[in-house]
Length: 34
Image 1 (cartoon, rainbow, N blue to C red):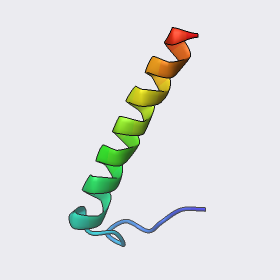
Image 2 (cartoon, helix red, strand yellow):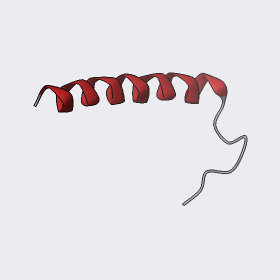
Image 3 (cartoon, rainbow, N blue to C red):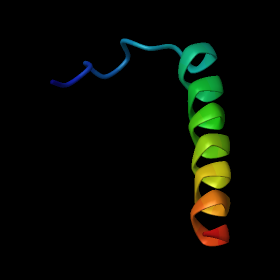
């Protein structure tokens, strides 16, 4: 499923990208510790 271009405003997708980046960072740190 694809979200059409321009459907989400930058005020919506920038914080979501930041949250996803933090989640990836934390997840990768936890994987490396094991």
